[in-house]
Image (cartoon, rainbow, N blue to C red):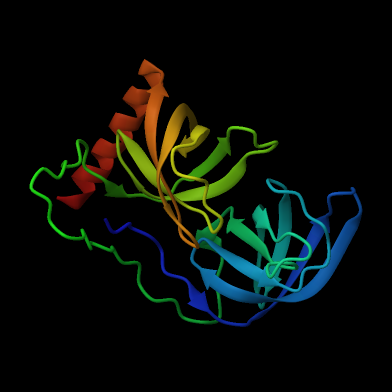
Amino acid sequence: MGTRREPRVLVRLPVRIFGTDANGRRFSEDVHTADISRYGTRLNGVLAQLRVGEVVGLTHGESKGRFVVQWTGEPGTERAGQVGLVNNAPEKWTWETPLPPAYIDNYSGPARANQERRKYPRYKSVNSVQIQGQGQAAPIWGKTVDLSEGGCFIDMQIPLDVGGRVKLILWVKERKLFATGRVTSRRPGFGNGVQFTEMSALDSQKLTEFLQTLAEARR
C-alpha cells in the first residue's frame, strides 16, 4: 500500500553546520546538501563525528535553525560523511530552491478479496517523534507523515526492520504522548509504518482529541 510522505528534492546547496561533536569538541564546517525537504535534509561531506539525537546548528542563506541528527553514515560505507537532519522549526526555515507540494501516495496494489480495511482513518499530520527500537542505545528523531489512533508513518531515511518492537514519544500540541508499538512496514529512504500496541488511557484520549481537530479541519 502507498504511504503518505513529504517529497524530497535532490539538490546541492551550500550550508554551514556547527555545534558539538560526539567527543564534546565544537566544530563548524561548510558542506552541501544531497537532498532537502520541508522537514529536513541529507548532507554530504560532514567530517565531524556526530551523535544521533544531538542538536546542531545549520545556516543557509538568510536561514538559521536548529536540527536534530537523525542518522549518520558509517565510516567505510557509501554513506560515509552523510548526515540526516530533522528541522526543529520548519516553519521558520526557507530553502532557496522551490519545493513541490506535499502529496499523498494512494497506490494500494492488486486488490485482494479479503483485504483488511484500515480500522482507523489516517490524517496528514507532521509531529515530532522519538522512536527507539529494541537494542538501540539511543532513540532516533523523526517526523510523522500521517497519524491515526492505531499508528503512524514516520519519515526516516534508514528505517527499522519490520516486526521490531519500539518505544515512542510523540509530541502533540506541546504534550508528550508515550506509546509502545510494532514496526509494520519499511520503505528504505522513506521510513517506517508503526502500529501502536500500548498507550495509557489519558494519552489515548489526548490523541483522539487531537485527531478530531484534524477531522474537523477537513470539513
